[in-house]
Image (tube, rainbow over all chains, first blue to last red; front, side, top):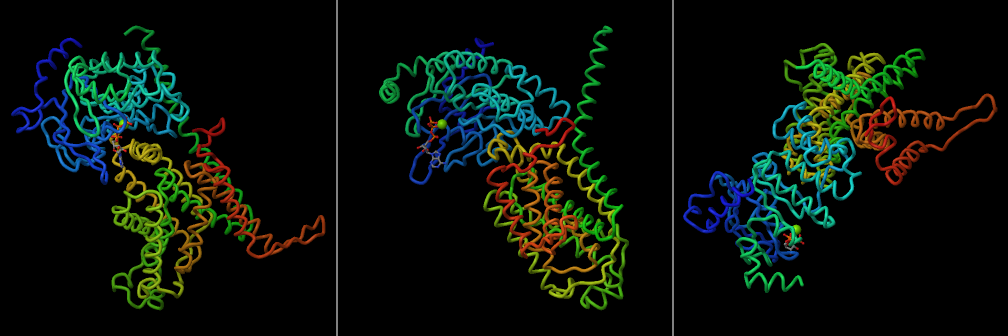
Length: 265
Length: 354
Ligand SMILES: Nc1ncnc2c1ncn2[C@@H]1O[C@H](COP(=O)(O)OP(=O)(O)OP(=O)(O)O)[C@@H](O)[C@H]1O
Ligand SMILES: [Mg+2]
């Protein structure tokens, strides 16, 4: 599965700026094209184009303040771009409300997790499931399945406010998975986890792609995890695209080495 | 399917239905408490019965307030305005035509001549409040925090001014008298139970779960596909209906309507009740009404002055003590127990549930 997805992506990799842009993204893609977001004078995201398909895991990396979260906000409808377009499965969805995009297959997690703290873990998941139109009993059963999948079964009836950090992050992912996403956007899922936990999470993310058949865009600072997990990377710095390509290509890119690794080390 | 599978299935089924029953426990306890108070109070004299009836009317209104404010977490000062709408609509529909002719000269002919039965009047009062809530709610349901507070307070003020100056229809600044006084401890108690059932059924619905999620985190709720404005509006309209019914009972309890009765004093009284009880649970709404009503009654008696015959001393509190104590209680709760007496949980056989 991983292999086939990989070769598929190799196949489609050169699709950065081709004639496809004129007719929009394909059925299986989520795309930002020429997206610009500014906050007052701050150029948070400047003319960034990125697209990924439903069997890809793409890493979105860059130093703090590079605009990664802002780009994810734009892709998920939480931030209206000042210019540029967002395209979902061949449809222009620029300006769609975030809840509508979520129901149409673009799910996300948050850097700050943002669980429904006063609700139980199961209710956190059921809320998402019910908004996709599931019946109550079906939602309850499905929530149990998803929690089992993420090894959270014994947490179902705890209040979200009572979770430890690692569980909290996994519940965040579970809630996004409950949306039956075609595209899953993960904002620093491994932040605050120890090495072992981060590794485990990496495996979970890889298996989510296979088991749920969705494309994953993951923001991550942990380079070891990124290198292992992602088939393709998109590097942002000060709001602009610095480099794109396979992890090996990006690591070899002089611009990346200068700006990113140079700044980090 | 093997025998074992079947029995396993049966156990699951039994578990599920037991779970379902267990979810009903808070409702059953609350209904039993209200019914108990109703039966107990009916053994006392008419004065005590009227105090308890008034308490039931407060209970209906606070439950209506809870439906929106408790589940959405959005501040709402307008609920008493919807009581007013319910009260006036029911009054206009149920008063005798001769009485209307004396007080209200400018009614349209059909309304001046009409007299409906109390139930039609009550339902129309609730429906009118709900309809108005739908219209005014649409633009303001995207607000939260201070914005929502200011917007709903503005709505209350607008209702107050319109009702106070629409002399031909409401009697304006004068009192509107001659409402049929059909309210008893029995029908007020039953209406309170009805309001509790309605609020409970809503609270168990998928719509309310989505609303509670938005209360916990609006942004995250949107990411989970929740249509925040729509869910808020649903609760706002249902809450306004219940408040409208409370207004109907209030009007037909007193027999006289004055716009002053639907302004700031009751607004803050009801909010105090909800906050003190714990605004995140239906149990909190009920407990708040019981605690504050009881306390207010005791303080009122103290202000009047009473003799303790056993000790042969006379107790007399300074005037205004009641309001000061209620305000201090509200302050204390907000400072030291922000989730209220119930901590925002529902009551169960084992205690309080999250
Ligand atoms: N709502 C906002 N209002 C004003 N400025 C903002 C807002 N959100 C982000 N910014 C600014 O935009 C820039 C990009 O921020 P963003 O959060 O997208 O960075 P990031 O790459 O996710 O960083 P990090 O790795 O720290 O999460 C930063 O300079 C940030 O201060
Ligand atoms: Mg970020």
